[in-house]
Image 1 (tube, rainbow, N blue to C red):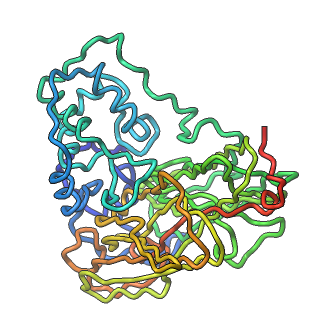
Image 2: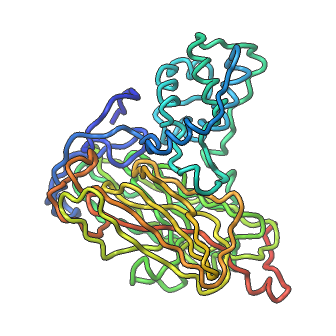
Image 3: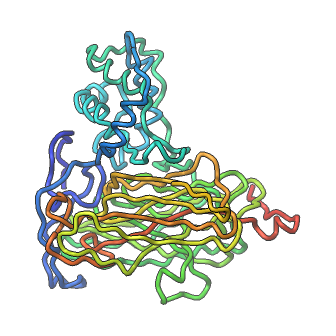
Length: 456
């Protein structure tokens, strides 16, 4: 199916654009009673949404009030714009990625100049939804005031090229991976055919690692085989004996969804894949009107330095959620208390289409409290991991509270059915409330003076 040209101000129907940021996948009308599919129809839908949400109005107002005024002179692509696109845009705006067009050359940037100017001015691009008043994040992809002013001035000045010899080369992404060249890649053992229509339950595929010894992993990235039909992927660890008791019994390794979800850990921190473990790919597929085959993968970069801390992913969830019909600002909470000393590495909120906002709050044993992350305009179409610029100590007894609000009213343009009472469920028209965190703890062998060996 061909993706239409991107028009930044255009609003589209949620029935057509549900599972990918920037319009890369579609959600078609679904028919029941297809062989091998769940015999159920999707709920009714209504008018749609912009591709990626801009920041919340309160954040925009704060930035306008507090950012310094910037004056730029003559701006050229070679000296000013190409470096910005390289740093902030090309991770997504390149072939085979989630963005619907590339920004690797001058001609490509000129072709989309009006749209670029618009989404930069309204702060919709690059996507970044964290409230700047809370937390500092290493992967903040937002533009500085000078960068924003330069892009707008470049378009207004007629997109001058400058010296072609001064244009930096586009970022080189090894075979499409954002984490770098993996040391190992594991792929589903066979393709899965996604039918043209229907509602699919989550599909699970077991892939053995055949690791003869324990392996420590510094960075991980899940990659869909066909982004048009892959809504998201979660990869779990399973021991030598298959486990049929569900995902709660399996440690989470890494996930993919439209946005920015690779796992990258600080030097000396890594995730453990035990000897003989298998990887369980849990994939949510979305039919697009044409049958497609998918064979997704995960790439691993091994730890080269001694591992002194073990990374763990924890989902802080509220599975008892019930959203009343028509509720405009329904609040839900979940919490987790650290039973040991740890360091917080990253946060990643997860809601579905009725999700409105999300906060992580920490209360420390000495009574201090702070907001770790606030996402006042949560965007299901662009889900991010927010990696702390500096790991934050979580003393034994620290409580993390997650607070989310949901809009199940007719005023929510994303809402599949404002007349429905909504409960927890896997499908997009159901809801979830999970505050994922990555933290690390002292590796026992390091505590004993024998740091776990890295791989070289």
